[in-house]
Image (cartoon, rainbow, N blue to C red; front, top):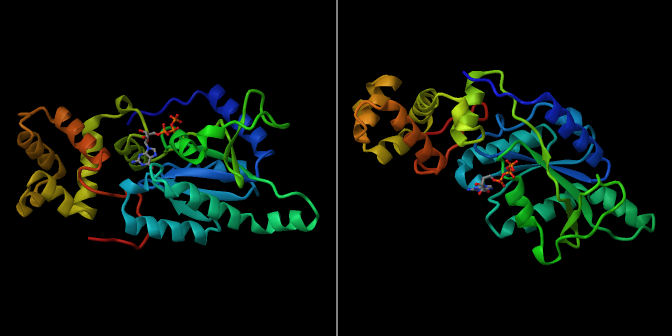
Length: 284
Ligand SMILES: Nc1nc2c(ncn2[C@@H]2O[C@H](COP(=O)(O)OP(=O)(O)OP(=O)(O)O)[C@@H](O)[C@H]2O)c(=O)[nH]1
């Protein structure tokens, strides 16, 4: 399997900037892809954030398996991490995030009021791996008519606070983390969802991973989409990929067929799915 080349210089700079920005925010919005809540998490994040209040935002929830999302929210909560799942394209997202943020910070905010301080907006930064949906969420959260609220002390030069509402402001520059994968499955899950650039992986490897996974967890989605027979499930993953290649009219070009399968899955044509399963929770 190809290994991602993260340039140490870029990584160090991103971390430095994140550490600087952490001083000026009340809360960190850590974004993970709801289809891969584990693979899209950077394991260093907790160390970087330290004691800062922290909200897990599971993006692309419209593409993920609802039951799994519910289990993941519970699992995060059990680790002391409040979590919410969102579709950044939906209007209700802003309200839901503002509400949960206010409840996480309720004690801090009411203590400030009791001290006689003025009511103020909460300040947040979004962080997450490339392609997880940081810009899309930021655009959803920000009231574009009155977006910029100007430079404030402490913010890295050139950065701005963006106003979401009277209750919430966001740093315009998200913190970029990198995915880390020491095992093949994590890499394949990242590749299948499009979190990693395609050319880094052999598409047939990713397609075989996808077939194995869908056969186990969403067999009906697979049979219905490609009009497979139940007996096709007796085939090995490789033979099933070859069968799909024929069904797609691609003769023996299994690489092209792999690309097509991957694209179908990414676009949600096989329905909603979650690749990282919470333990002890199987459906189908
Ligand atoms: N279906 C769905 N797609 C989403 C959602 N959020 C983001 N996307 C899509 O995911 C892709 C990546 O979103 P971006 O907002 O550009 O991600 P990013 O984290 O800012 O990416 P980088 O700039 O690479 O760090 C885009 O094609 C978005 O349309 C969501 O909630 N649901």
